[in-house]
Figure 1 (tube, rainbow, N blue to C red):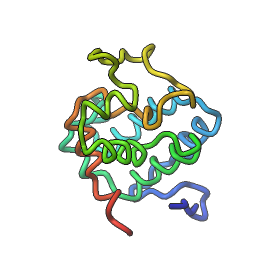
Figure 2 (cartoon, rainbow, N blue to C red):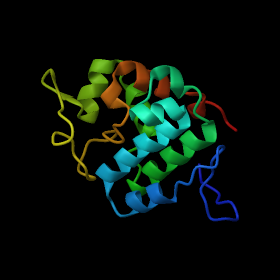
Figure 3 (spheres, rainbow, N blue to C red):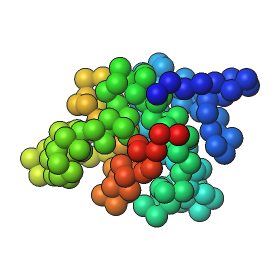
Figure 4 (tube, helix red, strand yellow):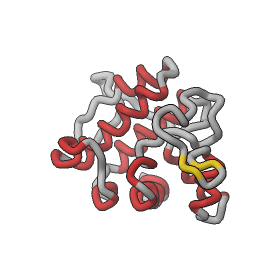
Length: 158
């Protein structure tokens, strides 16, 4: 999927969000800052209560416009040499037979039954395992990532 830029130079968004700041961070390899900004953008998509609390509930994920979720994902995929992104995490998850325990190990979020500690335990560069980032969804448990990986953005061809 290639992003097409509207005439104002912004990336596609159903709700007028500007993703150029996220693109800038990702294009320079500032993955930790990009992860934090991704969470903020997702909070905006989830609504004012999520923005105020600084995280999202799994019940808010399905309200994310497909175009916005795809824009965020495409930026992560493009600037990580196809190593990071929600769609990449979904591919890894599907490759494990939707086994969460195998997924956590494969993407480096859990090692030897110990959860990786934020932020120092995570790898913020391209040496990280495939699917390691973004991890903004990891911080709220399985229900958020489960809902995110099942979002219509990954199956809806529009």
